[in-house]
Length: 157
Image 1 (tube, rainbow, N blue to C red):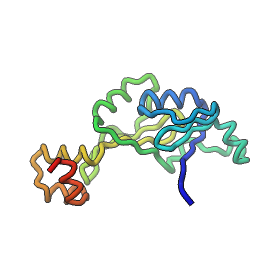
Image 2: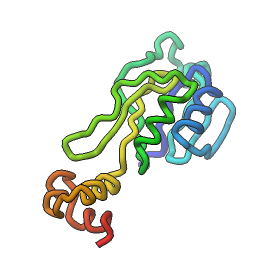
Image 3: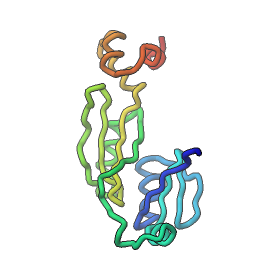
Image 4: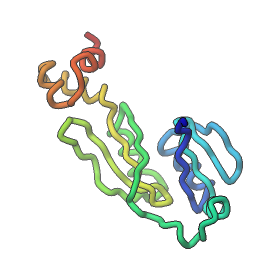
């Protein structure tokens, strides 16, 4: 058995598609009208079609369940944050940029269908930032929780 894709029911497929393309810079892999699959293999589907397909009453589909998130990485978190703040989507933030104990900076917010989105720095950029701040290789390995080989590759040594 092979995992293929996660699918999320959305109220407005056009709005959701625009959000993922414009705000999260995702590229459409397949567009079937009521179902859109993005590269990275996650999909969105109109709630009315989804409820019919899985034979669940539309009223039983819970919004803002906070039970999962979609995770994205970027090399430019600060610029992504500004783009989110300035967008016309009226984004509800769960939190602004925070730094986890392993050094990775992230933001979390809701998409137009109240699905949690996390956008974090890639760990390569985290390692490069730590290196530029004067951390030793050993300190970077310890803080980032990544192996020495990963750290060396990220720094380019």
